Length: 109
Picture 1 (cartoon, rainbow, N blue to C red):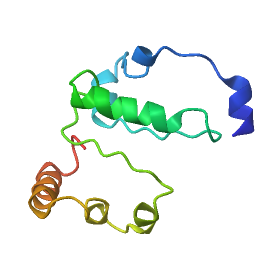
Picture 2: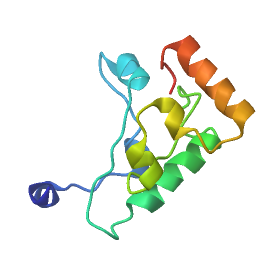
Picture 3: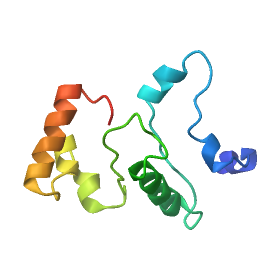
Picture 4: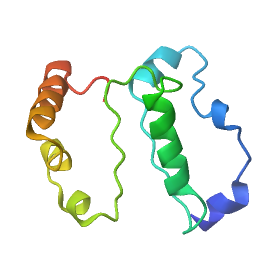
């Protein structure tokens, strides 16, 4: 991880979600992101911005569901299934989300 900090390169926010090349459409379908870094560098702020921009239709339009997971959260750390990650949502919403995930076989999540 320390080596990554030495290799860092500034990138514009809008560049993060640009998919180019021959496999661009395939990359969009299977996009996943893990933010890692030292405490206080802005991971949580950036994550919340991603979620807000997605909710406003600005980015990641290929996804129907975006869930921000804080890995330090004890309930997230203990989760052993996707259902566990949605356990605190309204029961109806939880069932609808899980039904959608199963129907789409995870695509768009």
